Image 1 (cartoon, rainbow, N blue to C red):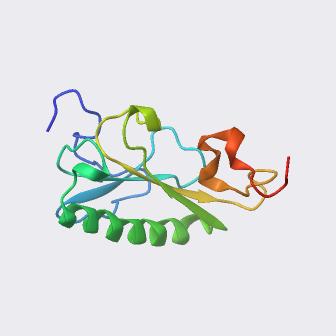
Image 2: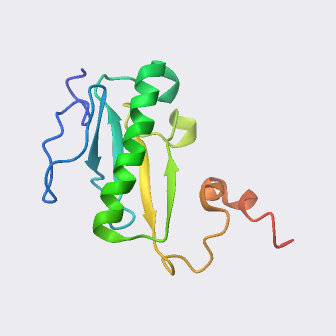
Length: 131
């Protein structure tokens, strides 16, 4: 546990009630959501990124991705999902405690959602239009 790490604080639930968790990780609402229902899946142990987790922690995270999807489905009925994590500053990671984003997507939330996570490098994202 790191003293100044925002994710080392125990998940205290939310206005939606208790969030799913297991012995190695927990789910919390994203503090800066990009869509309604945007969740973070966070290991309880302070670890920098996915590659610093044990295989048991990685499995615990993936189990909570599924439980988080069910939690979102019951409340928001999205049309799709983006699942992702940033590993290292060069990949855009700003909080150096591993966390997986589970982002519900809704029809019409973007004019053209094709390419999804490929837009992390915009000039290389559109491979289908020939532009």
